[in-house]
Each structure stands twice: as structure tokens, then as C-alpha cells.
Image (cartoon, rainbow, N blue to C red; front, side, top):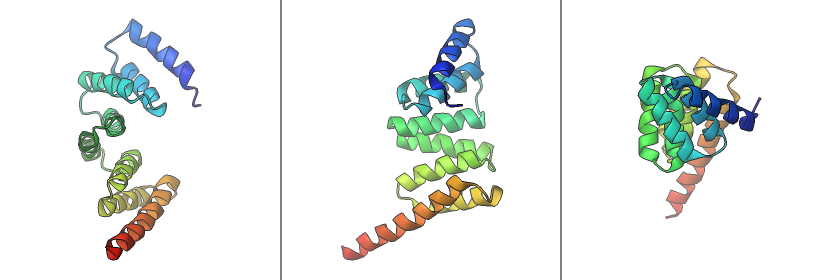
Length: 147
């Protein structure tokens, strides 16, 4: 429903009642990632990961938040680990693909989006991102030829 302010208040209250709730820490970390509060997101998702280690969804969100918080390599490593644990998860494939696209690793990004489309042929995000990969790769190749 994208009512992040209400979700934030409810989840803060849940954490007050139980600081050791991996789920509450994960969900509040997710809310913060949706609103661009990367440091808060990373802090909570690291706690969730400490409480419930090797959970692919927690690692996905932690990797995404780390990447956007400026720890790009570590973010990608966490997303790769998440994918290792859940190799058919389209959300992980898409997030990791976006990170690789941002890093101009077009080959890896393309492979990830293609795999997401094999799993979910109607996945619009993967389809749009795959088109972006092809566009940026062509533009990047043009720039290299001019040099």
C-alpha cells in the first residue's frame, strides 16, 4: 500500500516490544530502503541478518541498501550470496541485474534479466531493464569506438 510512515511507526513499536525480532528489523529496514534512508536501512538489515542469518530476502534487501549506501562491492557480494541461496528469485535477479547495469557489467546484467524472464516471462521490470542493458551497451560501444 506504500504507506511508509504508518508502517514505520508500527514497526518501531514492534521493535520496542521485541528488539530480537528478525522480521520487524527486516521490515523496518525494508521501509527505510524504500524511502532512501540507507544508513538506517543497513543498520536494521544487518541486525535482522545477525538474528536470522542466510535468509535470501534479508540478504537481498541488505545488499541493495549497502549498494545504495555507497558500499557497492559489498552490496553486490551480498546480492550474489542471496542469489546463491535462492537462484530462482526474480526480485534478487532484478536487483542484482540493476547493480551490475550500474557498474557497466552488461554481460552479467543481461544474463540476470534473461534468467528473470525465463522464470517470469511477464516480468515487466526485467523486460525494461534488459532493453536498458542493450541500449547502454550500444552507447558504451559507440563511445569506445570514438576514442
